[in-house]
Amino acid sequence: MTFNSSIRYQNQRLFVDDVPVLDIQHAVNTPVYIYSQRRILQNYRAIEQAFSAMQPHIHFSMKANNSLAILRGLRQVGAGIDAVSGGEIYKAIAAGFDPSHIVFAGVGKTAADIRYALDVGIGWFNVENVQEAHLIQQLAAGMGRTHVRIALRLNPDITANTHPHIATGHGAAKFGLTAEAIRHLLDHQHEFPALTMCGLHVHIGSNLKDTTATVEAIKRARELIAPYPNVTTLNIGGGMPVAYSSDEVVPCAADFAQAIALHVDGYHLLLEPGRAIVADAGILITKVLYTKFQGGQRLVIIDASMTELIRPMLYQAHHDIVPVHHDSNVQHFPTQVHGPVCETTDVMGRDVDLPELEPDDLLAVLTVGAYGSVMSSHYNARPRPAEVLVHEDGTTWNIIRRRESWSDLVQGEM
Ligand code: LLP
Image (cartoon, rainbow, N blue to C red; front, side):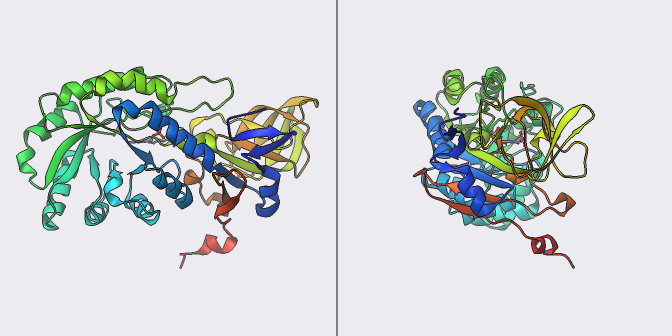
């Protein structure tokens, strides 16, 4: 059975490329995130290829995964970065990115973040607030900076087809500027002599289930900037989805490319994909701690929880959970897969079809490369898990983040 070109069973054992998951678990223990570099680069190249006629700059949205090793790999194939905080800019630079290949977005950039971004010379500010535009102007002028490139982020007032928690383009969302505010800023560009307002940014949400709302948002964006010939760049954000279960069909990069091609013609195009590059390249390996039969249900308690992966609890997101040792001949039963954290919502999967399980059996939670480890926490004083990258050769691997220890939990406290 194959989940994608890198995550599959071979002789009933789960592999990441040519590495048996068991080998990694023996060396590193659980819980552990494992990523396939091969799959990450394959996903990146698929986007590059799908959009090649439009010659976009692809800025990996590092909020999806900010491991230095993964960032370095994407830098080497030519990606730029979409960052949302001073911290992300700092990490991107630590991974070797040229600051001019970084776009800086976010509704709440602090003065310190903006100063830092100006100081290192980032490529673009995606501006979401009129006051923010004034603050960037003021700080840039104070630092003697000119030609600071600005993309104004449009809130197109469009509701995307996705989970409400990750839809950002409807009028009531905090994101972006209204069309009216953007027109006002573009009509008063002379009041911002340090800034060059030459881009329009629009991102309507993440894990978009169809291309319709994206096309509509781009149409509105174009209409808005048509009277302003100095606006030559369109940044259409991220949002390309992944399938979270084997029977889910979602539009691929080529579908998005085809849908938007006509509408971005004549503009320099920027993309900010996150999930579509890393999600299906990552799995989370977890161990069964206990099993029990309770309330008429088969329960397993695993050693991974909402502190390693919060998506199921926060967005009711589905992640396939499969055994590391797969035997299709044994009977499978609906199983409730619970984490150990003291919260009723700490359920990794409900009614998961699993074989009879014993303590120490291993399970893999799939499609966790995006918004997995980055959203981990120390809740219940749980150290963060180890992370491993299987290299592009498919056979060698290394730990890219060591497992935290209890002493990490008291770091920084007085
Ligand atoms: N650009 C902007 C302005 C964004 O806000 C985002 C994601 C992206 C790009 C990247 O979107 P992607 O290609 O990954 O869909 N934690 C949530 C997802 C939050 C997305 C936030 N913004 C989840 O686990 O589903």
